[in-house]
Length: 275
Image (cartoon, rainbow, N blue to C red; front, top):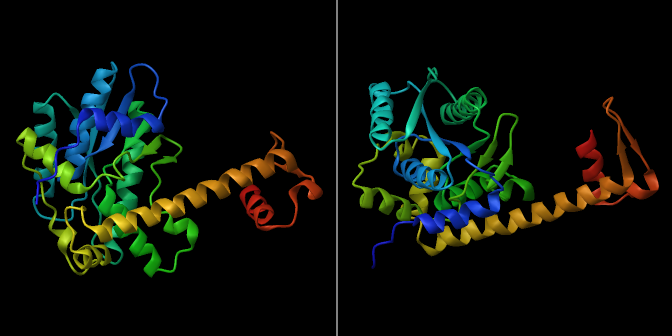
């Protein structure tokens, strides 16, 4: 089997294009764990920003859950600095206990967004890829998620501090690892990613497709895409209905025309959005 080719700068630019506009000299931030996929994102995003007169700030979070994690994070920052990429360390200091991965994910995102606000970086890039999207769909399906949850991670999501962008959701992780191989960079491997105590690690092992190039991963990612298109269509229908049925007042209340709102599923979703 042929080895996957590295994702190119031109391909990355094509993935970024629908997530804009970015304006002149865009100031990006990216969450970089030191793993292969976030490091590849840092290299690609740095080249993309520089080509447009902008810059990238890598945000390296240290959860403090493993001995030596602080030194690893410092090593990642030094590696990036050697390539001319500015980096900032974020010390999270999480305590061990139940729901560790979920708590770590939430704490990391909170810290990343806080850093974006402090640094004046209105775009936060994350390195989630096709296999991550497939795992997310399986994870949510096993927890009984409805159609909105089965849409998986969105390529763009608004947050108060920044717009969270995931440009690599359709990219197999093998192509991102190839970016690092071409650059001569050895990534950090977090052992918790293969720890069967965690549900996502078990799903990853069950899929048996670490490179994300197999048919099962592709089918799951495509299913998430179909649910995402359905979610987008519903959101558009809700926005259209609200535009004709509701009048929003700056004091924080809404005036609704019942006849224009209707009594169907879209009306229910529109009323829920207002509430």
